[in-house]
Each structure stands twice: as C-alpha cells, then as structure tokens.
Length: 303
Image (cartoon, rainbow, N blue to C red; front, side):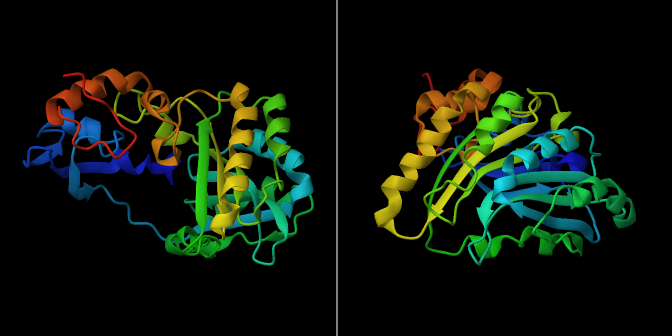
C-alpha cells in the first residue's frame, strides 16, 4: 500500500532508541529530530530501536492476488507490466517476476494489491486480467493479512538465500529484453529471479532528503532473490545470481534498497544511502563515534 499511504518509515511517529553509550532516547519530530531522520532509512547504524509508534490505517478487504503466465511469456508480460504501471492509480501496487508454483511449474507472474473500492479495482485491473493467456488468475477480494501471507509457503524455514538488487535507472526496451532473458533460468526452482517491484504514488512524492531513505525518484527495483535447499548447491546459485546482476549493470543505478543487499561492501553501502550519506556520517559521529554498531550496511564515523 506504499503508493496510497507511503512507506512504513514514512508513517513512523516516534522511536525509542538505545544508543552506543547506553542512553535511551526518544526520536521524533520534536525530540532528537536528527536521530529521527536517521533511523528512518539509516538501518541499525545509530542504536537499537526498542519500540516504534506508527501511524496506522483502518482498512477492510483488498482486491489482491496474482495472475500467472507461462515463463515463456516473460518478455511480453514485462512489456505489458511497464506500460500498465505508468497509468495505475495510487490505490494499486503491482510487482512481477519469475518463480515456480508448488508443483514446480515455472511462471512469470504479476502480483497486485488494490486498496480502494473493490468494484473500482475490478475496472482498474481489467487490462491485466484480459492480457495474454494466463495459466491462472487468483485475484480476489481478501483481507490484507491474507494477501501479505500469500507467498509464505514459498519461503519455508531452512532454505538457503542469496540476494542481489539494484534500483533500475529506467526500464528501456533493451533492459526489458535483458531481464526477461533470465526468467526461468535459475539453477534452483525455488528462486524468485528476476523480480521487479514498482514504486509510485505517495512513497515517491516524499523529497529525497526528507528521510534517510533516498530512493524516491525511481520507478522500478530489480531483485534476484535466489533460494535453494542444499548447502552443496550454494556455489552455483551464488555464481548464477552474481552473473545475472553483473550482466544487467548497464541498466541499474549504483544504489539499492539496503534491506536487499548482501555482501557488496563499503562502496555499495555508501551508494545505497545516496545523497544522504554525508549527513548520515555526521549522525554517526554524534551517536556512535566508535562504530559500535557496525554489523550492518555500515556508515563509518570519521572521528
């Protein structure tokens, strides 16, 4: 629902934070506002958040679910997804990607959540429901909790995981063809790769420097979320994920959403904070000058 209500961090009202020197501070617009700015996107660099106060929204059922196409349709679906995403209202959020159904049928799917009147949502989603020849259409009126847990069975405990992600500079025809070329090619049937998130609406209307999270001006986030069962398959899955990521660098910005990065190191961590990095360093100098909180996508102090 980020397009209607903003990101989760945009709806944080206050946070209680234990800092490196043992202080318990409240961070809000009125108390320690610099820390409040930093914890909304700066990761665990400034302390341990022990409680959060959120702005919540009372919401009934949503029109949500997914439509599954044969993986061979990946290019056509991606081209449709790109065009459709440019016209949708704030009430609708969509994603698309390649993965396998529980019977291991490989698909390229579009997932959707419409958080307005379901009758209006049916009209908005009609182009998607009429597109192509889907294997299955599981869009329906369900609770938001049902929607959020719909893909839980695809991520059982014990799976190995490796992720590469970057924000796409733009979704050109060349980029779409390159991304589609990797659909259904993962060495593991349990991977969600490639996968695209579409960002728009309220989440993208917040100025880049309003919070520490900087990636507001781009529309698409690309992920290769590789999953596999046996540790003996780690090397080939990690290698495949890196090869895909490297092949697509031409179409991606250097930065990424920090929750989606794995082992890219200091340079990539800097890029993930974008234009806000130097302000975050100043906060690090103030609240954690010894870099006590360093087991993260680290912002290193300079003092």
